[in-house]
Each structure stands twice: as structure tokens, then as C-alpha cells.
Amino acid sequence: MIDEEQINEEAPASELSGVTQLAQKLKSEVARVVFGQDETVTQIVAALLAGGHVLLEGKPGLGKTHMVLALASAFGGEFGRIQFTPDMMPSDVTGFTLFDMKSQTFQTRRGPVFTNLLLADEINRAPAKTQAALLEVMQERQVTIDGESLPVSPPFMCFATQNPIEQEGTYPLPEAQLDRFLMKVIIDYPSVEDERAVIMGVTSQAGSGLNPRAVDTICSVNDVIEAQRLTATVAVVPEVVDYALRLTRYTRESPGLSLGSGTRGAISLVQVAKAYAIIDGREYVTPDDIKFAAVPVFRHRVQVSPEVAISGQNVDDILAKGIETVEAPRT
Image 1 (cartoon, helix red, strand yellow):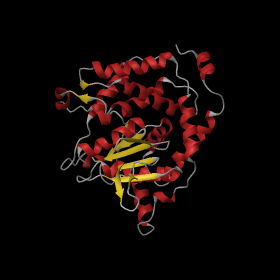
Image 2 (cartoon, helix red, strand yellow; image 1 turned 90 degrees about the horizontal axis):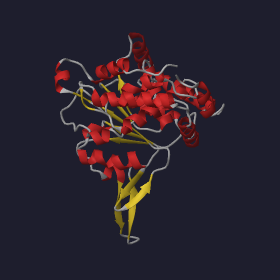
Image 3 (cartoon, helix red, strand yellow; image 1 turned 90 degrees about the vertical axis):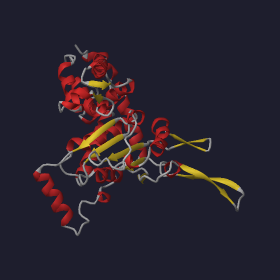
Image 4 (cartoon, one colour; image 1 turned 180 degrees about the vertical axis):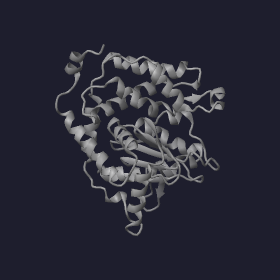
């Protein structure tokens, strides 16, 4: 049984309501130009509050880049974009040093990774050595150029997109890099009504309709940093942490999975659950928050065993089964 008195003692008071309002405003602004993706928008806003990176996957033309651009417009920080291609070098991401003939000194040229919100578009188009250029900054929030470690300004988030159906000329992300993404978010086809609204909105203004740059800027860098700090203070009782651990261990013990999640997955699960709680206007995490976060947090950290894959089941099916079978604490 979850101790409500313990929740009330640990949870901060009314200051979290401001974060809830900020989250709802962000969702509303992005939803102005992104239709039919309410759950996806909630997930990327949750990632922003949790301060983690997101891997966006979806078929071409479903608005992956559009969604990130809309969030960047609503967020008042610096925005950088890298279009990954097979001929890219690591220095195209991080930067490099160049000898300046005039001053007779080496000058550091910082790459596009020095920003607050980075869009790594079609990240799997670049070879492994270029993908690996993001490993340090995603984990350590710093970049090392010629032996000098340069911090990136907080907050820093990476939104990477990839196409799941076109594999020719792509380089799969290694498990070590996948694990650094807080969530893997799947963008699916919208409903008929939402798709009709998208078509009408885009075609009604000579191709400039639903422009993500038209989204109003509603928060500053300091607002996001404060929101992330307060999100981390959301209360989570030991019973709910134990539930997150049981789900994590299920991914390691399930016969349908050949690779389970590590401890970073369990940490990410609680972080995202805290963000869901604050978006919902609560100062504490419930088991339902853990359930809602489990699939996007785990789906890129686990692998389906070959015999199960042959049967037609996918990662989400196995994880959904785990959510149904692993006992949740009573509320």
C-alpha cells in the first residue's frame, strides 16, 4: 500500500503547479501545428521536463522534423540542426581546431552541437564514427576537441530522427548509443480527421500553412532549467520504485527478450514517470505513470529473441505483456 502521508511530506508544495502550466502551454503550442499526435507531443514535453534525449522514429512524411521545430520555436533557447549524411565526419558535429595564419594561433571552431536543443535529422544515415561523436555530449554534456573539454550550455537535449523502413545506406545505432536516449517515440499515421486538417492547413496558404516557426515562444532557458529542477523533486515512494525495478528485471528475465534493460533504463523510467506526474498536475508518481512510461523508455533498450520475432511479435507486444503481468502496488 502506498503511504499517502509519506507522499505529502516529500512532495513540494504549490510551486510545481507552475511547471504543470508550462507543460500544458508547450503542448498547446506544438499542437497548433502538429495534429493527431497528442500522445507523442506529451512524450516529448515529458522528455524536456526530465532533461533527456529522444529518438523519434516514423515513416517519411509524418512530421518528425516538423514536431521538433515546433518545440524549438516554443522553447526560447538556441536551436541547432544537423542533417546526417554518409559522408559526414565527427568534426562536422563537434567542431575542430584551425590554425589562424594572422594570429599564429590555433582557433577552436565549435560545431552545431553547441546549442540547447539539437535536431539530429536522420541520424542513422551517418557512419558509426560520426554517430559516436554525440556519445560524449549526450552523456557528459561536454565536447572534447583536441584534448580540451568544452561544456555545452544547459539545458541540452538531442532529438534524433530515423526512418524505420528504409535500410539501404543506413547504419544502425549501437546499443551503447541507443541507451543514452531517454525514450524512443514512435510517430504513427494520424486519424482521417486529423490528416484532413493537416492537408487543409498546409495547402490553404501556398505551402506555408502550419509553419512551425509560427509557434509562440512561451518560455526561456531559465524557465526550462527551473522546470527540470522542480520535476526532479516530484515524490516517488519506495513501493513505486520497486515496481519500476520489477518491470526492468522483467525485461532481463522474459524468455521473449534476448537483451534486457540496464540500470539506466530503470532510472529513465522513474525520471519520465515524474514528468508524467507533473504534466498531470500531481506532486507524486503513481504506478500508472510508470506503466505509461515503460514502453517508450524500454523499447529501444531491449531486443526480441529470434524465435519470438518469427512468430510476428514485436518489442511493444512483449513489453505490454510485462506491464500486464508484473504486479503493481495498490494505490
